Length: 330
Ligand code: 2RA
Image (cartoon, rainbow, N blue to C red; front, side, top):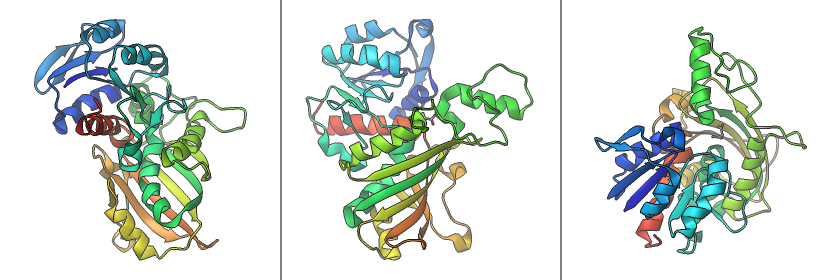
């Protein structure tokens, strides 16, 4: 399969190349694509060096699939052009996620919505992906009424700038590289993306809106507080879930353990619970700290951790492409 990776020189784009190789995706020809300023740079894939090409050149080559992680502006302008050329686009930006004509997909949850007619497919926000991977099997069994989520998000979520700011601060290196309004080391910033009229950030409203679209149920009430923390390995989330129906904790734990893409790490007597250090560079969604919310009936507390660059971005886009290939939809 001829595969273009648009944004191949960025943090997520590089992870996409790594995951394509690791998962042995059937790449016959690879086309790393980036903006004009990066054309001519080299990236490595399966031990070979590839020169980065421009967007129009990539369309002219007509790859079978183009996996985008190049920001919303590039996706808004170029995804339709790739699609018009008959190229299936899987886009990691937020540009198309809430477009009613576009599918928003986490394969473990709703891959079955995909058809051959879908030429631009949206990859959800990283913090949403790990949430719905854990919520979906529980919704099926107990019917979710309301979700309250607080996140503790890795600096890698804001790309190289975020990583550089933390590294510079920690190494006491003076630098004008600023991903955040405040210092991030030894701090926690309740501010990811821009603030909206309603007092939420765009990141928080992504979790609210995307969760219902992916789960296919607008009756689920969601509220979120998203926080940036000085962590590298992945995003963590404290989640409170109110169900229509009661549950038995051991049965609920087993449902999660049996669900695709989930690893339950829940043995607090032996200090076993999910942590970003352990989730780093893995594709699973790790769930633990399972316990009843004793303040109200039919309600669960849980802790969810996943590598936001992998399952939260690169791996999920590639799993969408794998599904499309397996079903003959590309
Ligand atoms: C973040 N989820 O963590 C956003 C975008 N990757 O910054």
